[in-house]
Length: 245
Ligand SMILES: NC(=O)c1ccc[n+]([C@@H]2O[C@H](COP(=O)([O-])OP(=O)(O)OC[C@H]3O[C@@H](n4cnc5c(N)ncnc54)[C@H](OP(=O)(O)O)[C@@H]3O)[C@@H](O)[C@H]2O)c1
Image 1 (cartoon, rainbow, N blue to C red):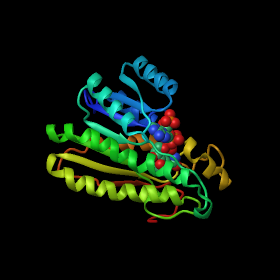
Image 2: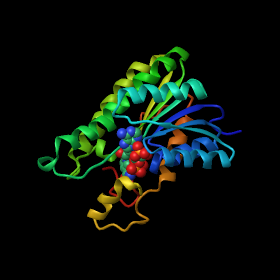
Image 3: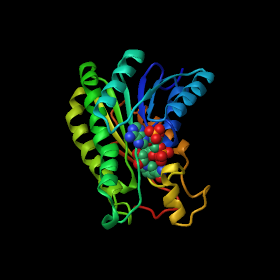
Image 4: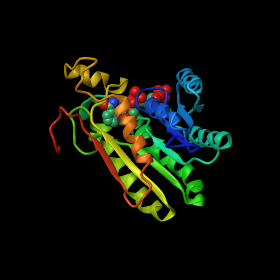
């Protein structure tokens, strides 16, 4: 019996990195996974891998920047798997540039994906969760939602905005039995952080950066929290980083 047996989990940005690792661990624990992202090939390959391991997952094409795409993706997940129990807002993008050099399109792309996209998925999924008085939302934040980092103006702004969105979501949904968590990691070894690691002269496989599996295990832990205890934000920093920053 898995920890998430029969739970329907909708995971954005499941084609690679942290989202893919969350999809795999959730499926291993018995969840029915809706794996959503733009890259259909990678999503299909993930679903095959999950099926080969005895799990269940469906691939869903999703571009978070499009309201219509979000509506279609949520509707498809619900019609194929049933009402969504767990929504993981994981998809995100990062571009490095000083504020003075940031093109408007880059700013809009980050805000549309990292914040507006989360608003859209939540607004689409919440009516069913509220109706059933059951649901859990995990928003993947970042240390960049707590501090400022050079060349990460748009990214930091988006992740700080996500903190505000998560706070209000928690307040508005608590009375409906819905739990909203933020999972905020520091540096993780994924494509998203490659340019950042390169700019800091870090090696591609630095053991000082967290793995996607470490983040996925933390997401699973949050999904097991059902009693009187509640984690609003789970912060995962690199052990090599400065404590309490
Ligand atoms: N890596 C880190 O160091 C780190 C640290 C703290 C927080 N985070 C956060 O962790 C989350 C996952 O990042 P990651 O490191 O795993 O990055 P990643 O490997 O680059 O994966 C990002 C995922 O987001 C999806 N995505 C991007 N734009 C999208 C869009 N418009 N619509 C739908 N999906 C979209 C990508 O899929 P497609 O391209 O196929 O659409 C991909 O699956 C992000 O929110 C990121 O901010 C990462």
